[in-house]
Amino acid sequence: MNILFQTITFRQVQRSANLDDLDRRIVAALQVNSRAPYGVIAAVLDEQERTVARRADRLLESGVVRPSVFVDELRTGIGQPVSLRISVEPGQLDEVAQQLCARADTCAVLGVTGASDLGCELVARDQPTLHAVLSSELPGIAGIRSTRTYAVLRHVKPTAHWRLPLLSAEQEKQLEPSETEAAPDAGPVELQDNDRALIGALRTNARASFTELGDQLGVTATTVRRWLDRLLATGAISLRSVVEPADLGLAIEAEMWLNVRPESIEAVSRRLAARPEVTYCGVVAGAFAIDLLLALTDLAGLYTFLAEVIGAEHDVRDCEPALVTRAYKRGFVTAR
Image 1 (cartoon, rainbow, N blue to C red):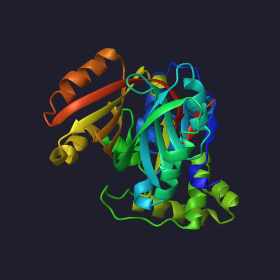
Image 2 (cartoon, rainbow, N blue to C red):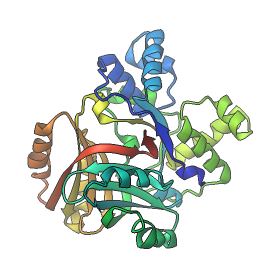
Image 3 (cartoon, rainbow, N blue to C red):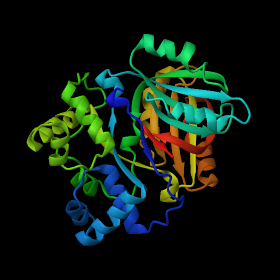
């Protein structure tokens, strides 16, 4: 199995995790840097390290926070990401979702309302592989009625870059890894075998120590640190923490597909990506140009975003919103 596309399972935690303010600020810190030492987090939050360590361990052990890594498939050339909108035969939604989750190439599988039943992000190794997936593999899954495919052209705001807006810009800067990420328009990055091995290890446990990673990969801790710093500096990867919005009190998750005038795609996507409600923003090829994921407190917030935020974007010609009813898989991590 390609270590970059390995599937990891996690225990589905109880929704509404009853997090207090400190818990949420610790989550926000781990969203900035999933490898941030507890001492650094405590200093940034002006809390006792022992308290932060105890709280953070509980968040990690319960599965509320799952440290991982985001790989920019487009920059590294490891595959072509596509967004799929899938219609399913009545009564077969869960069965189809589980079969999609079992695929190593699916990054996310979400139950949604609206014209489609499932939203899925899939990464194909190359164009022939993508053709085989769309022409024979997905149609061969019993219960799939139809699919619509949108090739992802750019991750304007990967989910790895979303975090709770609870920390100041200065606090976030103190938590960032020592190496900064490359600009969105930076050139391609060619991954070496050691890079792929490290990414696979980080996807399993992004908080493993350099010594633990070195033992796993058969190299020294210093070598692992050098590899990681280079990957972060090139923008090939971003450290991330996978978090279910519902655990953070954000009960409403929604997906929006926007039809935008071509000359305004860049500006509109940048403005929307800057919104704290937007957990993902990507530019896709198809009838809709921009794909958004949102996390909000309630339906009133979704209405406000649709009527006021999207309504103010005069170059948005059409919008198709849908509620996310269940996350079966997110960031290559599958719920069980």
